[in-house]
Image (cartoon, rainbow, N blue to C red; front, top):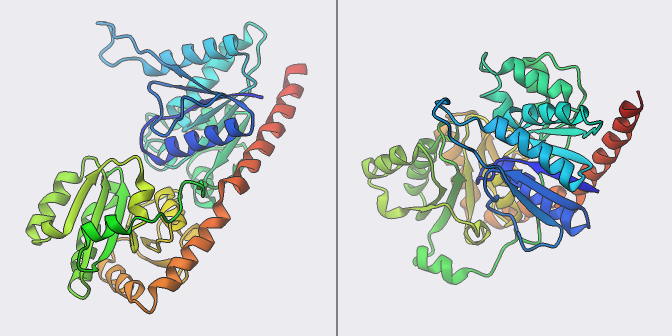
Amino acid sequence: MKIGIVCYPTYGGSGVVATELGKGLAYKGYDVHFITYSAPTRLDLFSENIHFHQVNIQKYPLFEYAPYELALTGKMVNVVKTEHLDLLHVHYAIPHASAAIAARQILATERIYIPVITTLHGTDISLVGKDESFAPVVAFSINQSDGVTAVSRYLQAETYQHFPISKHIEIIPNFVNLQRFKKLPKEHFKRAIAPHGEKLLVHASNFRKVKRIQDVIKIFALVKQEIAAKLLLVGDGPERAKAEHLCHEYKLYDDVRFLGKIEAIEEVYSIADLFLMPSETESFGLAALEAMACEVPIISSNAGGLPELNVQGVTGFMSDVGNIEEMAAQAIYVLDDANLPIFKKNALMHAQKFDMNLILPKYESFYKKVLELSKKVEKI
């Protein structure tokens, strides 16, 4: 089977999931073609079954903004025809699904039918999609897709609640590659950062407002009053400057390290004792899952799809969004030497339920189902 995957190539969860999915499919012998504006950050271009097709965006004086969606549509048409793809799997309703539907219509004029599967990841529904400028396009793109998946029950419910959707939305959760995300022997790294045996807390995200980075700092400040600790912040984004300012204000800067974007993030998780995710909303919480696979328990909000991942009192704890004091108290409890080993073990055991080798067959089965239905559509 030849599969086209369209995603954002950045560090965000949707791009990571799409890339890991493509790599997993390629390993199983599928011919996988990535179509995007730059090579995804986790993509292995030296794999025999992985191909990358770059979308080139031309700038014209007539357009104030470069017409990426049109360029993407044209590229999809070209790749489907030249590579004889069997289906397109697009991640995000807009602009990827809308561009794919347009490409499918163009190809139909040449008697080529390409099924489109759309995976919803969160922001396309919870933030961008609710904008009245985009909402009709989001609903149309979902309804016109040959198959639709969502990464959590929460996201499925949100989509049905806010859009007039007639399509069945299949739930296929995010997954983790346990061959990569596992606790590694990095004690020398830990001793360099925490030379006096301090507990290491970590947060990883794109530092957008919804991630509540300032809450991470405030939780850490309360924890540090009771326990010797350090905080590692992985990622970058618009809220970083505010976070740095807050560290100075709380006189925490010597105990907080801003590590920026890191490719080998599993090495950071391998030395961490606790992961903080106090987000305003999360459709799933992929970063938390990857941390759990490295035996790191979670302190999170109870927003969005997080209750489907973080098991209260087992893999960590959840609190209402903004309840900094409770999150800090729960963190102190988990970090207690008598409790931490149990939470670490539980985190790993729960993460194993999301093993890529368990989730990948769900996508394969869904692909086959959609392809069978599309053959019936072609005959009509």
